Image (tube, rainbow, N blue to C red; front, top):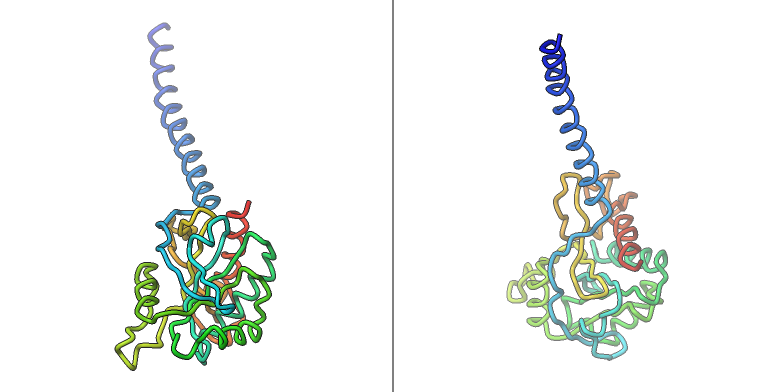
Length: 227
C-alpha cells in the first residue's frame, strides 16, 4: 500500500508541477503584456537645437525642458501633408490644453518661412498655445537636426527633393528624452504618424481620410507623460 501511495503521489506531482509552471508562465506573459501597454520606451536624448520662432525669439531644446512636447518638420507653402499635420497638431493642442505641453514645428523652407511668415501661418493654423513654436533658421542646420532626430527631410542641394519630408512626429518627455509606445508585437514604434488614413489601423494614408489612429495614441501617451 505504501509503495502504491508513493507512486500515486509521484504521478500527481508529475501532473501538478507542469500545470503550476504553465500557470506562472501565463501570469508572467500577462504582466509583460501589461508592462508594454502601460510604459513608454526611451529612444534617445533629444538632439540639441536652437532656432528662431514666429515671435523672433530664440527657442532651444533646453527651453523645452519641463514640458512634454512634439516635434514635426513642415513648411508653410506645402500643399499636401503639412496642412494635415498642422491640423492634427491643433487638435492635440486643444485636447491636451496644458501649460506643460508644447509643440515644435520646424520649417524646412526657411528662405520663405521667416518669423513674420510663420506668425501669420500660426494664426491661420489656429495655434493658440504660447508653447507652440514655429521655428526657422539656417537650412543646413535644420537638415542636420532632422538627421539627428532620424526624421527624413530632403537634401537642400537636390532641387527635386529639398522640400520633401516625412510625416512622422517625435514625442519628447519633460527630461528631454524621445519616447514612444510599443506596437502589437511589443516593438517600439519610435515615431508617430501625423497623417490621416482610410482605415482605423492606419495602414493606408489618405489626405482626406477620416481616421487618425496615431493622433489618438499621441493624446494618450502625452497624458501619461504629463502625469
